[in-house]
Amino acid sequence: MNKWLGLAKRIDAFSRWTGIVCSYLIIPLTLLVVYEVVTRSFQHPTIWTFEMSNFFYGAHFMLVAAYGLLYKSHVTIDLFSGRFSKKTQAILSLICYIFMYFPFIAVFLYFGFSYSLNSWSMMEKSWSIWGPPLYPIKTVIPITAVMLLLQGISEVIKTVDVVFQERGGAHES
Image (cartoon, rainbow, N blue to C red; front, side, top):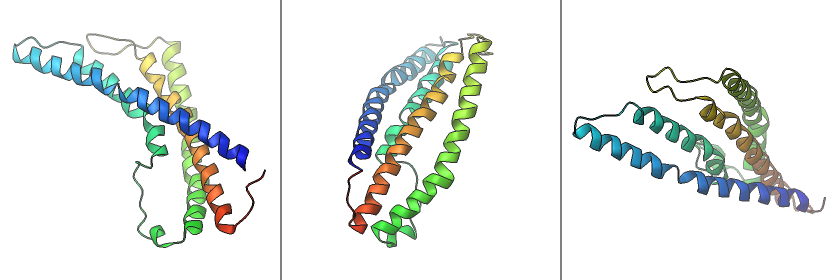
C-alpha cells in the first residue's frame, strides 16, 4: 500500500502546485475587469475585454478543480453519512467514486477531447467582432478532465487506505 500512497502523494503535490499556479489567473482577470470599468466610464468600451475575461474565468474555474477536490471544497451532502463510522464513510465514498465520479470523468474525458480536437481541426474562432481563436481555451476542458481523473485516483487510494486502517490491516503491497 505504501507504493500506492506514494503515488497519491505525488498526484496531490501536482494538484496542489497546479492549483496554486492557476489561482493566479484571477489577477489578470481582475485587472481586465477594472480596465473595462474604467474605459466604459470614459465612454470608450472595448470589444475584446468581455470575451477575454470569460476566457480567464473559464480557465481559472476549470484548472483549479483538481485542487478543489484535493481540499474537499466541492459540494457534498453528508446529512446521513456524517453519522457513520470512518470505515463506513470510506466505503460509501468508494462506491460513489466507482459508480458516479469515474463514469462522469470518462464522459468528460471523451467529449472534452472530442470537443477540443474538433475545435483544433477547424481552427475555430469566436463569432464575435473581435474573433479570437477558441481552440486554446477549449483545450482546457480535456486538461481539466485528466487532472480530475488523477486527483480522483489519489482520493480513491487514500480512501482505500482508510478502509484498511480501520480494519487494522497491514499497509504493505
